[in-house]
Length: 380
Image 1 (cartoon, one colour):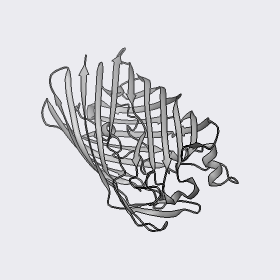
Image 2 (cartoon, helix red, strand yellow; image 1 turned 90 degrees about the vertical axis):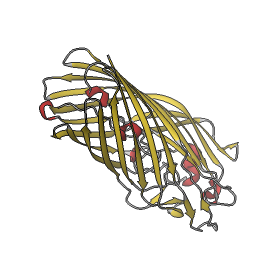
Image 3 (tube, rainbow, N blue to C red; image 1 turned 45 degrees about the vertical axis):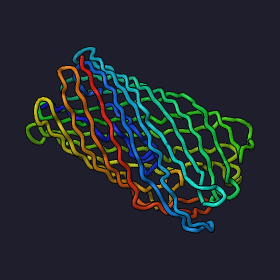
């Protein structure tokens, strides 16, 4: 049983960059490695979040907070080359993590007005897969990743840090991927487990307060999370496939503690972080159907785990999410296939907090996002 289906969740990633599911945008998808023959893929996606809130008056203000989620786009590419029936090589280019958060309003007349967070990444992953037989295979490779970021903390909620800016210049570093898969092609069964290592970056850092340097230029160590992807599929009827996935990412290891910020928060306890993202587990299940030799479709639902409470960073003002995605693929000819789809995400309610102890500053309720994208595949 062979179906030509797309994985919309992997293609579009998170509908919002900073959320309970961390900074994930691509899910570090390596699905091209399990395709047949030689293949080239190009993918394009975009997301439009609607994420607004209301200040709760804890700083003396009760302003409405307009949409803080900036519309963003993603690009990806993949190349697979079959060396032999047992050995395949692949190269994957993606944008694994990202953030585009901008709070409207004045930093002198609102709790969080002017706060921003921008994170940009790209990665190149070189992979190999070796099939011992039709049932068992191993896969793995190396990943090169670059990351850069800028954070502005603005508004009355930050007290003496109102006006803080951290600029983190780009740094590249290496990680690795390793995994295994079990298959029964006659029933369309595949179970694949993939481990993505953490990657540690040394980011050149500049810290200012209202434009004035508050520490010498230095280095901030930032670790992107290790993650475990479990992907499953099986045929359940003629031309019908049941699929699902679980992704766990250890975001608690992602700390951003530049020198001046750390000292200003609590000089007696080192390690204060601009970010505060909890470990995340994302689940998805769906059904794919091949309607004829040219057209296939799928529908899926997903759940992104929430945190231990609803108090979250203003740079990540959601608490988990649920989503529904629909997609399809059309085989133009023997060489080209076009895939596309759309996803609607509903975010869990949360309270943005600052201070020590944590103090709720704003409520973010009933928020959502719409994302869409397409992929073109060329087999040769």
